[in-house]
Image (cartoon, rainbow, N blue to C red; front, side, top):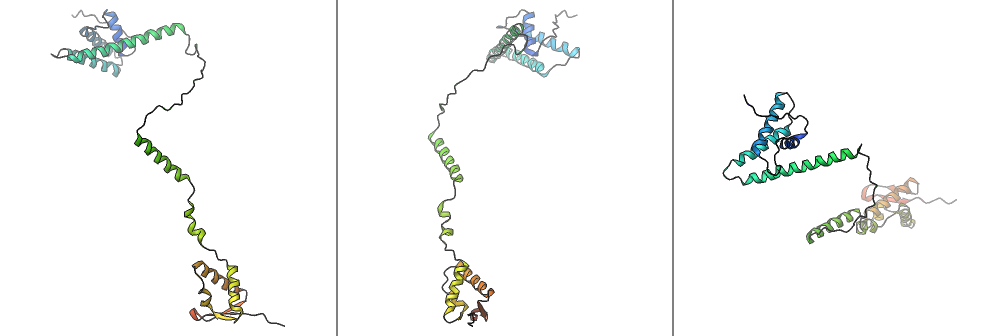
Length: 238
């Protein structure tokens, strides 16, 4: 029958806590851990947890594989890596041990989490820009910023030059123009009224003026197409 000692410790939190308790029980030096003793005790504790149908968290199994890996590397002819692995594990254990001591000290000092409250302090913000940029990076940022600024500006004046430069012809002005042309002879070809027009808008205004005069019975239109004539209707004198 195996007389090997098995420490049954159920009050621990996480694999690091278990390792610290094993180091304490076996009176091991945390700065020079004997892996053979520590690994054996750790695996025995894992087996005990499984035999008693206790949930074994993945972090405990991960630590077990980590310890076995360290022991395997130490058995190789060249095992420079094992010293780094042991230093890393020792550092984690020391850090965890210190956190436990601080937490235990605070638990004795305070009754709750909000016993000690520090008043808010006014901190002056240092607005000095200390980041160093390359010239190309600053230039690209400037170009990007200028592009955004131009998109927010109103359209330039040249965009409206074609619209503003066009002369606007009113129908009322063209009504006077038609009447003046018919006042002498009283009759004229309709196409002659459009001969002096320089723009399409002027032709449209003249055409609308003729329609308004015809609607008001001031002129009459005879014929079709190019042979159409417009005649002024004069008022009869008593």
